Length: 132
Image (cartoon, rainbow, N blue to C red; front, side, top):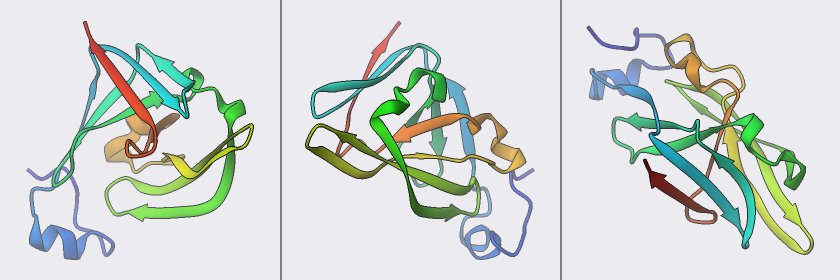
């Protein structure tokens, strides 16, 4: 049985990939995130999201992210499987990385575990995972 029911926002994708899946599991180790050399997050409770057609992505609990380094922006995106994503920019000293962090503030029920977690663009942030 498919994970996601057919809805108007998912209909086109599910017609092409009927068994689209988003798997949420706990990372067995620690994740540290640096931006411009500054540690902005460290967690031993991160999630790994494995999604059809995407590389796995780490999501860290908001409590493990140093939110003082970030400002929420007006940017948003929509995923038919996870919901609407909100974004934050890194600002520290003269260093700025626009919209480098995102979060699904009110994720769809099928991926409710993403609530209160954030992820980072790995092409602009250094995300290090040490497996235990």
